[in-house]
Amino acid sequence: MPNRMPDNVIKIFSATRDPSSPVHEVNQSLKDKSSSNTIRHLASAFSVALWMSVKLVWPLAQWIVSGDVMFHLALAIYHWDNPDHYDGWIFLGHLTAGIALTWFATIYRPPRS
Image (cartoon, rainbow, N blue to C red; front, side):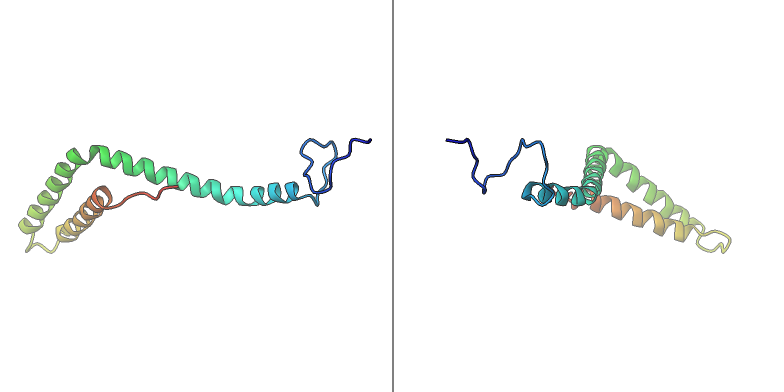
């Protein structure tokens, strides 16, 4: 009785590789998707690391950011009548950055992968 394998069994440890085999097709499709998955995974890991670092220092950074915004508000009020200063726009920029940081630290949750 010869030792013969059925035709519907995938030969994993065969010496010759058949390019039309299902295993080869799966491996090729995984290779094609691996570059986009790698970039997506790296972006996700970066966003999680950034969120975690901001979240850890947020209690102290919240005071620093609010003090910076208040300082620029006072500076904008002080230089209100002087057309040579653009402290109002600088204040709006710092206020926007403070609002964005507050949103990022309190509301945003990184995507789970």
